[in-house]
Image (tube, rainbow, N blue to C red; front, top):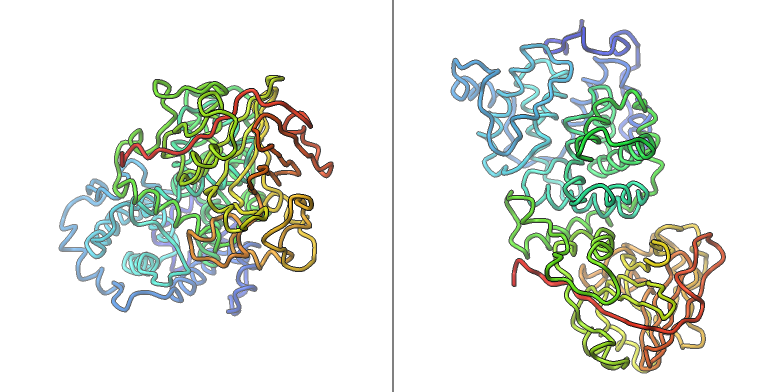
Length: 555
């Protein structure tokens, strides 16, 4: 065996990685490295993979003072002493019950714990890092000795490139990544998300397992292939693979009864036995087929989720029920939707606002059918939720990301605003959520000049012709421009309001128009899509409600 085999139990290792030849890696261009990593160029040769890992990790920009192999040799005896390495207690920032062994021999299994303790000694700022044991165990398969593995892990942890996120090291970063993953599932795995909502009381509890699926449950052959690409492309790869896992889980298990009383346990079991369903190559192929947001957009979404957690004082690990709130049945009363229906709606909204409780701001039953009162009660609240029940007992609504006061920016003209987080939905007669057109169908963006910010009511439309031409111009249509000091052209055109009417729409060709008296409304439906219309083309409103989001943690 080669010089990188001292911690490997070859009886457990895939024999194909022992024998297949591959040329040394000489390229340095990112795009070429990216293609080779995705193709598994160094996956079939153990020694080559070890050399590539060393090269890629050595090129990670790090803090000036980053512990190296010599530091490990100096401190390991002092920290570990003569204790049995297999029984060493681990620091609180990792889960002692989840330390993967993969294809390590007995010496390698003990080395994982020794390296974790030495890292805890050198990185006192780490407060929560559940992925660390897996990363160490994986790298030990490709290390000449413990000290070299320690140095490689330290370089990953000490990365100081602000654009290159690698491993979460605080509960705030981890928790916000779980919320971000939940947001991405909501956008890209709607069928799987619908299943999670149906069988789980706390959807985010399920999604908070997403890193465990990768750094804990995935078999060695799979996590190694993921890590190949991760070292080249970064954190976004992890989201992609986790989304692909969820898609395959839904495809395989959707028509089967649950194997346990917990969807969490079922997903973990599926990932552990994923070889029965999907090959590593097929998993990555599925992951990279997802048309995911840009790295910048994901970074902004992560920032928004971190900010929401910080504002609620959630920066350290605490009991889950204090972090993720469901809609409280005892405090909720609506004339349009039930508690269960409101919880379903809550499962669709961005995770940072799902931390809040619904707060009734306006109802036609109490405040009358006045558009001016609608605005006065709704303004100052962001986001808001609009619910409508028609006289034909249809129920529809919209999640609106932006404060209605933004409509004043257009003066007397009808002004469009809002972001790509907006969506419209229908609850009765059937449940349907309509995505924002430019996110779900980017190919509909046609060439043309930058749209005007203001349009007259007569010419107002939410078709693809109204959207910016070049997707690269929309740095982040998904998020609110003013929250992140982004240029105004990143804003979408989802909401519009004047003294005469309200227009909401754009999702999958759906648009909702409400007259000033809030008694009548109409919908338009683009025939490009096969979805059922939001509600009747022309309808009378029985009840209309506007809900805000109350921060129960900060009063």
